[in-house]
Length: 112
Image 1 (cartoon, rainbow, N blue to C red):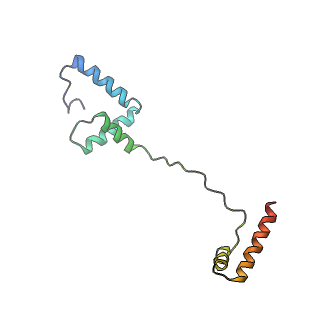
Image 2: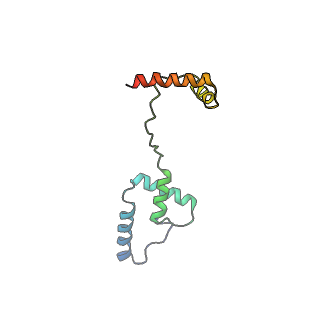
Image 3: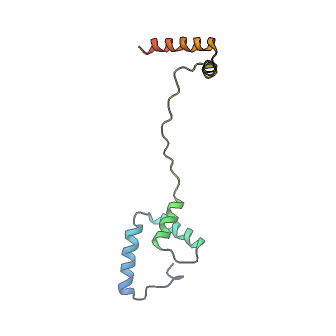
């Protein structure tokens, strides 16, 4: 990169300060990833990258890690047609209401 871009005006004083600043800001990025991030930025921009550009490119290059939460456990027992039965009971069907009440009583006995 040094060949394509300007060198510090006062290399004796400016260069160590630049190195220290870049090291503080980009020190957590491994060398291989740093190089890849610089190349990615240079492919997209005609300007020399600043630390923010390198950090943004590095974030873009990193593989996405999804935090997968544990899925809820399946119910132990599914009652086939229960949704339709409850819907019919809510609509006023006396037979459906009786079956829902019977189901509630059965579940209440199992919980105790």
